[in-house]
Length: 126
Image (tube, rainbow, N blue to C red; front, side, top):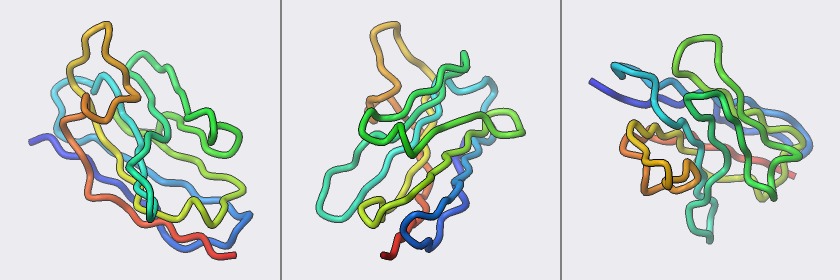
């Protein structure tokens, strides 16, 4: 059965680094997109980064200088590298997998993702 599992959250001091890991397990085929989203206090859920099955990797413009996504060592895994973290990065980070996309669909769109992890908490202290 398909499921998405995140790991790597925790507490970090401002300016530090953190790596979150996502594994899409039980999928017959590689997910079309593996995306990271976050829910920070007082804000709506926002897209952070995604990696497509074809290997394209994008981060949100406001975050791309500090937060990047890359393939993990195992199939259908993705790493979210967070550098120079800020207190405003505090929140719950969710990984998700999309299995079917039309050419007009965007991996930035949370509605395109059917499988979601439980989320992992990131807390940045100043």
